[in-house]
Image (tube, one colour):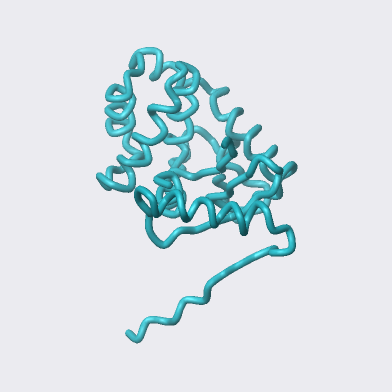
Length: 178
C-alpha cells in the first residue's frame, strides 16, 4: 500500500512514524522565502533532502538523515553532518554541494507545502495521506517494532483512513507533579 507522509526532520513524532512542513507562526513568513543569510533551523535538511532526490537517492538519504537526528542526536543544521549522511548514502558529494547551494532548491518545499495545505488541509507533521484520500495527523509516543508496527498500522488505517466520522482524537496528558 502506498501513502503520502508530510514530514519535518526536526519533529520527533515524524521520526517515530518513519520507523512504522515547516513554517513560522509569523504571517507571511516561509522557510523557502527567508533570506539565505538567515540561519533557519531545519532549512539545510530540506535542501539536502531535495538534493538527494535530484540524484535519485532520496529513499536512502531520508531515513539516514532521520536516524542521524533522532538516533545519533547529530546537529542536522551542521553542513559537516549533512555531508557525512550524503556521503554515507552514496551521493555524489560534489553534485550534492552544488544542488544544496542552488537558490531554486527550496521551490520543491514550497510546492509540496502549498499542495499539502490546499489538497489535504495539512497543518502539522507527521500527516499521513492514505490511498483513499483520507488524511490524519498522528503522533506516536514510541516507535513500534516488528509485528507491533504492522498491527498498529492496520489499526491506524482502520480508524484514520476508513472511518470518516472520526475527525480528531487527542489524548490529554496529565501535568507533571514537579
